[in-house]
Amino acid sequence: MASDAALAELPAEINCPVCLDNLKDPVTIECGHNFCRFCIQQSWADLQDRFPCPVCCHSCQERDLRSNTQLEKMADTAKAPQTTRGKKKQQGETPLCEKHNRALTLFCEEDLELLCHLCTQPPDHQGHQVRPVAEAASHYRQKLRGYAEVLKKQLADTQKSLSIPNKTCSELRKQVETKKLELRSESELPRQFLECEREVVFSRLADKEKEIEKKLRANITEFSEYNSTVKGLRSQIADCRVLTDAELLLQVKSFNKNSQAPPPAMFSNQLWKEGFSFPFQHSALQRITKTFRVDIILDPETAHPNLTVSEDKKSVQYTERRQDVLDSPKRFIVNTAVLGFPYFHSGRHFWEVEVGDKTNWGIGVCKDSLSTRLRSPAAAQGCWQIRRHGNDYDATGASPLPRLSELKPRDIGVFLDYEMGELSFYNMADKSHIFTFDVIFNEPLRPYFYVGHDSEPLRISIGTD
Image 1: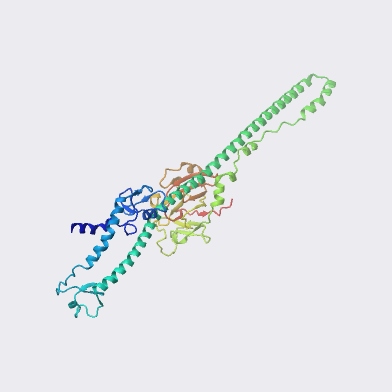
Image 2: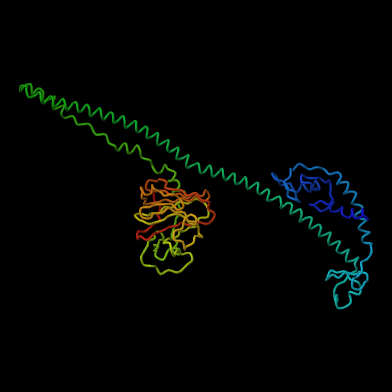
């Protein structure tokens, strides 16, 4: 009896977890689980870096498949007794009905219960389809065999599906590394371009300096010679006082010739200015403005009630009189601000804003989800801007910007690189860089404009060079 019980437990040990059939050419992998050699090789067919066990997901070495001859013999030994035990079990004693103490020889298809012939009497199973046990068992054995095939296919599909995330992860890592290389290369271009331009300009300035020094020395020589000539004429005039009339007249021709020589021209500093000019079209900013410029318009539905947006949606101005506007959750009601279109989900974008003589303003971008109830939104709330309050300038979440106090910019360029996480500001008067925010953007962004409480308008530049 003990041997029969042990043999009854064998099928669970000799079945492959992948195909659910008896193991064929069984192999043991690194974690100790056993599979058909063909099944495990098929499970790992599309994998490269990581080979998980289908049972415990342990990462294994692909080629570390050890043949298990002992398990193969056990599988062969267990095949014959399985059939015999099945037949014996089918021919064993028939169970009895607990209610009527009669043999359970029938099966109810509706309730899926074994019945004796007394159980079929009304009312419990009246009208139900009832079959003899042997017939019902034969039907369900066939049905389960068919279902086993379906499960086998589902398991194979599942194992194949499990390999896809591993393959996808590997491909994703490659794509990320490729993208990083592209971005590094792309981000190096402006720096390399500026360095190259700087060397060209420095070389040109050095040449111009030598040329100007040469001309200055020549100009000094000309003035020295002219100075000597003038001194000679003065001496000649002094000598004429003691000459006779004839001697004086003999000197007049020479005196007239020397006195009519014009003074040398003063060297113009215009050449110096030309030598130090740095054409804007040679800077990286020029390429940015031409390549990534976007047409920004204001969104009146977001404007504070005291702000008036122009018809072309390019200008906004603060007024003391509150506008009669519709109440909207998108509208700023505390901060005198307005948002712009379009939304930014990715990519690089450039626009210009004319602040003129305004004493209060803020320019930048914010998350589309920024609360309209904030008085002075900062980077922590999802708003990145540079601001002016009277004579003070700052960038939210950053140190003060003293250079702006010196420059007092009237026209500001804004450049957003969504993927690189950079928001840069430029003074368009001298094309100089002001400040750059380094941020990880993960939400849609919108242009942000704080207008303040002075009546000077804030305008979006049309961007003509």
